Image (cartoon, rainbow, N blue to C red; front, side, top):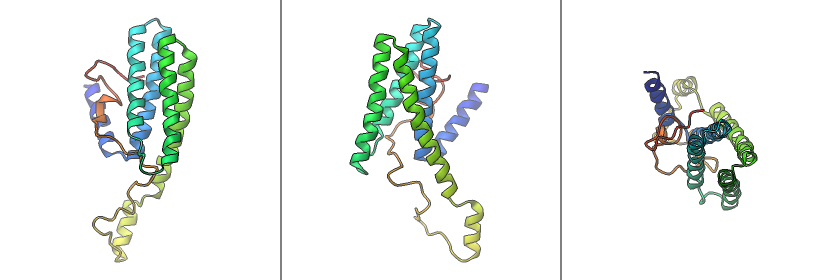
Length: 182
C-alpha cells in the first residue's frame, strides 16, 4: 500500500514537473544510486551494488541523450564533457572496484544538482502566481491563448527524449529489477 502511494506521488510529480525539475530529479536519482552502490559494495553485496551503479549509469546516459545541441553548441560541449567524465569515472569505478571514482562522480553530480535546484527555485519565483493571474484579469489584461511568456523555456530547459520517467529512472522497481531507492 505504502509503495503504491509513493509510486502515485512520484508519477504525479514527474508528469507535472518542468524540464528543469525533471533534470534535477534525474541528477538526484543518479546521486542516490551512486551512494547506494557504494554502500552495498562496502557491505559485500556486489551484485546489488552493480545494479545500483548500472542504474546510475543509465540515468547519466539519459541526461546525455537529452542535451539540446541546437541551442548553444559551446555550452552543450562543456556540459557533455561533464557528464562524459561522470560516465567514464563510473565505468572505471565498476571495473576496478574503486570507490574514490564513485566519490568523484558524486561530487560532480552534487554541483550539478545544486545548480539545477537553484535554477528551479529561480524559475518558481519568476512565474506568476494565481493571484497575479487574477489581478491581471481584474485589470483587463488577459493572458492570450498560446502565450508562452511564463513557460519554462530557453537554453536552460533541457530537451528530454521521449521516455517514461515515472518509474524507469527515478524511483521504484524497474522491469529489470533494479531499484534506485537509497
